[in-house]
Picture 1 (cartoon, rainbow, N blue to C red):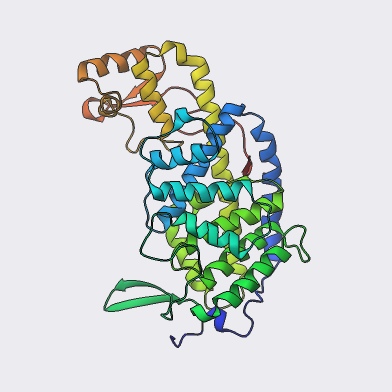
Picture 2: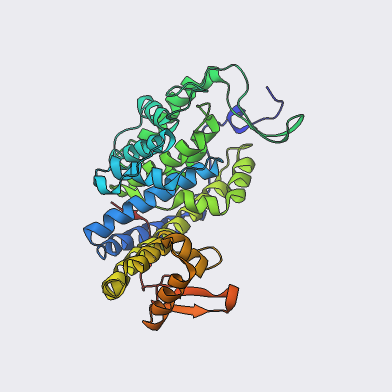
Length: 388
């Protein structure tokens, strides 16, 4: 064992301390934003709500995996999620890979069974599904190896050690204690905690124990969402992993800082701010779905099949749009047509006022002329996390 005195080795572990007053304003903002979001959802039709739910669950599954350096296939994942939520064969993609099928099953459990008490069995089932298809490690059980579980970076011959987790011999006891704490601090538990404090401690506590050989970060973020859902009394859809992924270095830096002591105000403040930012990102996605519905209500009858296919592909990129803008080359690639046909289609879209053309020659780009849809979504709706 390394000589460093990690947080779990200290006498006050796991009795985390924090300055609640410094967090009260964040809790108030989270509660306010969450209330606003309930009203926001009423702007979505059932079909749009289903689309939004799948889109955000898919994004979260992609991003929580990307944070750990694993890149999933979006089409396969989206198809798996449609299948798990029973939303029809027409959405199914032919080649569903085990990795995408597994995380889709875990995400369904997370969103449909959020209110159940936490147990070892739930965590083992999540782990088994999350690592579906993996044969290089044992799935659905805590780690048992006597080797140190280390978080390292740098050269193999000269690694930088960022953290050493508790040894496998301590895992069962630590997880018994963690699960007991999680259930006691739930809204109807014996010692309920406020939403952001409970969510922040949940994530830090779990990833510190690091009970599995792999998948700890992904399961830790899933537990955060389970905690938030329990505090709201309904499953929450929030862009948490997407928000963390945007500033991944900050996430790892604050985790590394925090793993050496159990006074966790800095961590809770950072994580609370991150959750609130995730709420705001989620609202942008709601705006996006609303804008998409309004766009097709206004223009669908004016589009030929090629134009509709290309515009649907633009919407698939989400609020951020195409990296580098949408070009004639993009159009030709999506619709599989020659340059002359693409030129006619794009000119037609500009003439109808559906596209605005910017730039010249190779720098020409096309923007959907649907204010306030593009380049940013701003339909006068602001607020917090989204609920199914």
